[in-house]
Image 1 (cartoon, helix red, strand yellow):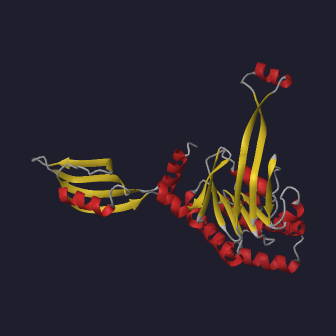
Image 2: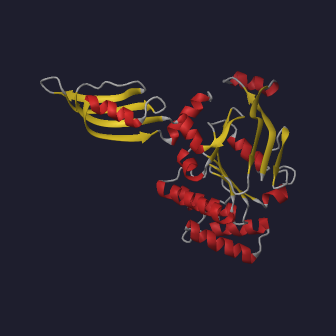
Image 3: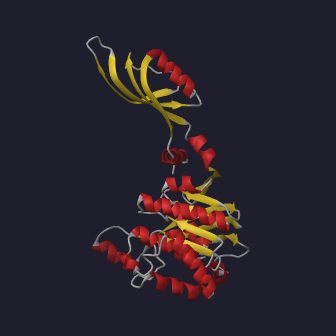
Length: 334
């Protein structure tokens, strides 16, 4: 169980104007700004839950993960993870968590990956039998057989990320913090990592907190989403409800001929390309129409269009998860 109550964290950041003279002045008179990375955030995450923690750059996502993992000490507030305070009980706490930062590595750069795993075994004091069983399972699930004897610096990004995830799970943590785990990965590697995370959550009831800008990761892995912006929790709810609330628009792509395109209320044209014959009738028309399904149902929109046009083809699509999130950011002005 993760319980976060009224956590605040402010950073002191040095600022100066460009130029040598300004640099010299800054040696004696430094100017600082105070940035609120976390501003009174609170939430609770149950055991075995998978939660997407989203927000724009600078929103406070990574700062939250660092507080939860015990790397940062907040200015005030309380946090209890499995009965421990992360920054006070660090040694016991880190035995129970796994952390993957997409832009940081816990692998030693110039040695084979298996040597890094052996070092982590000693750091976490994992028994030899448990380590061997866990390693064999992770090698199979993440397809590491061919790469664990290779130095980390010689791995591709996708290979390294699979090894990073394996390294974070060698000690069987009950909680996994994933900060941009699929950053820069190709489509095949992304799907492999997503499937592995789903499998670990299902089999071991591992609690997963996922922070990412890849909304396909969020959609594939989580049902609950927490939105943070400017250091504040702005929304905490079900992903399906969020998509329904902020993605109520549908897109109709139509191939038509006959009359010029005229629309009913609740619909507007995104694009409309067509040509006309000698009599001024539309031929080879192609249009993309956005409709608000709260104003006009899709079936009524199709009926209205077919009464005016000769429809040759029609397809209906919902707003993508990326479009939903953009709308969400606009709504909260972040």
